[in-house]
Length: 301
Image 1 (cartoon, rainbow, N blue to C red):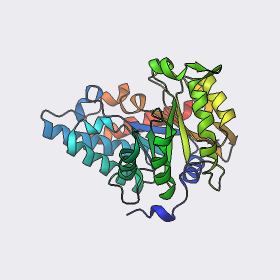
Image 2: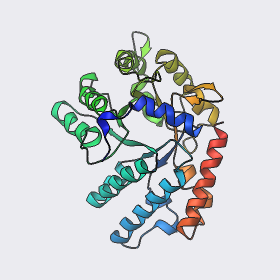
Image 3: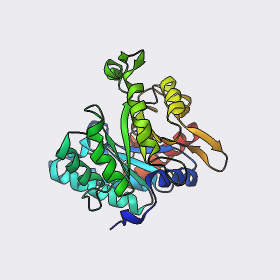
């Protein structure tokens, strides 16, 4: 059992992990069955569950000691029902024991007591799912974030709040303008006092935002507006952003501290790269994923 009440804040743990690993790379665990190597494809529902567990644990083993964090995509486990969620529980515990931060990509958000329940499930002291931070959706209003913020701070966990995402249709709403500013900037300005109210000893907040690597101009603008805010940056690799775009939202402090200010996530290029498809054993797959992690780390230097 993790003593959540007496650990460092999430912002501090993230800053220390970035320095220790000398890379902002975060490995996404997104088990798309259609992209899986044959090694992890089952011929029955029962066998697929077993393969899903093997795939997930292999990704953790490859990431251990090389990157600061992993990011499981919750929906891709939820689709397998109770057994899939049990594997998600196992991922959280195993990754934590391996020294990895766990960013649960659940994008939760609702009103009132429903948000309280979500916060308890993912962030609470006795939450059934271990996570260091959770992605949440703010577009029902700032008040719907309050239960998540309260629970995150009480348990020294963190949040990454959707702000300017990497999907092609994100501009439909997030770029709409009001008072000559886009909606995402209005949201950032409302989040600023919340972010600044929860700074750790390292100067980094435990309340972060999600901003896609495919939006480098916006990332620079948001970094100027939110200097103490950790960014979760999807879109590097398969979604089209190169390293220079992905790094726009981070701060390179110096050689000792490396990049600070967030995580750059990559999944498909790492876990489903061409070299992984040829793996015939779990050890071969782990070796292939390690190669892909090392390549991504080098791109982000």
